[in-house]
Length: 429
Ligand code: IMP
Image (cartoon, rainbow, N blue to C red):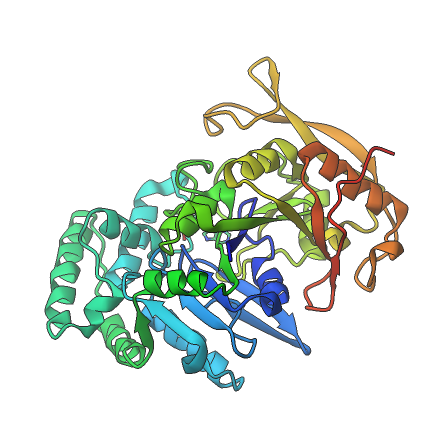
């Protein structure tokens, strides 16, 4: 049975948590493969909202195995808070959660290094979530990191202190006044709690599940345009966020990858700094932010908003090998007379239809096509036959432009506000 992958095609916040939750009944296993508590996956059902940062979004469904894979970085303190919130909602976390021994651990000084690095960058700051993600992946690739399996070693404290002292030296050089002593107390409390969890050699577990023909869904975090290699570098996160990362972040061979679900918003958002060609710094952008409640699930920061960017979307589809598109939040666009879609970029006297190498130091002007909007609200729609014609035309337009079928449309945050489509690319009208 192949491993299906579900990931974001823009700059994150596309609505991955909700869609994983909707798809989970079709799967036996849900596995996170990269990122860490910089993610905020929001799920809504039975009138309640839940935000997950580290734990896979399959945790709310009975009988699902949830795996935090080796590619993830874990902050024990955030994990503990997340688990307490779940326990208070009667979710039996211990039963359905396995954590890879090879996942790396975020320690308090990683967060301090993140803050010091951003402060040093001044105007060029990345706009990091400051969860210590970058420094932890740096220690991983620098071969200094601490892993979940190290928590089982008797000398974990010494290993921790060695790394912390290295960080303190760096912080001194960066003229940071950071002092981790207070945070260390919470960290070690959380570490003790974490030791009660089920640590596994997740690559063996996942491959056993594949052999046993169990269906596995790999849940991506952040978005393809934040990928360390293919995103808008240097304004990116520190992990690979694309399909290939499901292989390295879980120990799954490429031949086992099946469907690739690519999620995109009917418009675009970005939180943090960096290029965003279709950004609307005007009342239209403000209207989208308000209607879409575009504020970060992890940091609460207002998200930058803009129109759909086809060159960027097509690039993400290519890199990920997307087989199915999932459109989220078109309900936010109800009421706009005209909807604009960026089809090309105008840059340095040329018109191009792809993302150029340098998006930071050159001006990129979007070239738009205007599409008629729809006035009807979409939030109460329960089948495709109820879509306003202009919205069906918008869907058909995106399918033609990308040559990938849109198989799910999400018209609101609740599980129930999800419409499955036949998945056939609609022909030109
Ligand atoms: P970091 O991964 O926290 O270092 O942040 C690097 C960049 O990625 C910043 O622009 C963040 O705002 C952005 N980012 C990181 N995680 C997410 C996410 O889950 N959703 C949206 N943006 C994110």
